[in-house]
Image 1 (cartoon, rainbow, N blue to C red):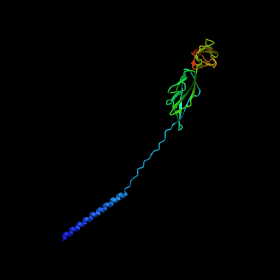
Image 2: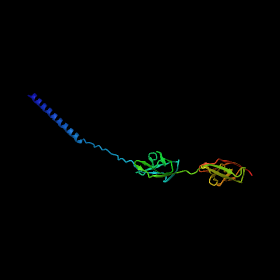
Image 3: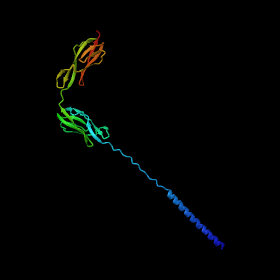
Image 4: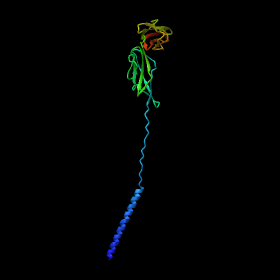
Length: 230
């Protein structure tokens, strides 16, 4: 009889322990569930600044632009953008001429005069076109071909004395003109002899110097001037 009572008591204790553990486990599970928080994920979006757009194009060359037939001239184009910045768009623009029989223009903006007349040049990019530049082509006039220098006295120049030089220009049409007063005179050694704007040389010290005349990028052959002591 005592053994059955002990077994029953043991059985009751075991059932009670299991029930207690079950309650405790549930409580822990509830506590764990109640304290778990979901951390929200925030994403930041960086605002993008739109790229500046082309507002206008300007050709640097003045209008009207005079160009001789057969001559060339490089044109340049500058773009103004919506943010106020400027950019050279010469090589990225599309160049156009209103009359290619008068003046042509290359893809890089090089204009060539073809025949006498007028032609409008424009530059375009991204749907924007520049104001036109009117190119006026004409027949080139006579040009200076060469300069010859001569002097009044061939003998040596005394120190302190003067000697007049003369410049003669040969023009492309075959004419010859006295251009003494038009040229720029120069002495290679001014300490030996100076020369005025009118071609008058003055001996300064014994020695040799070279006298030359220049006009329109044409320079005469030099003439050696010898200065001697009195």
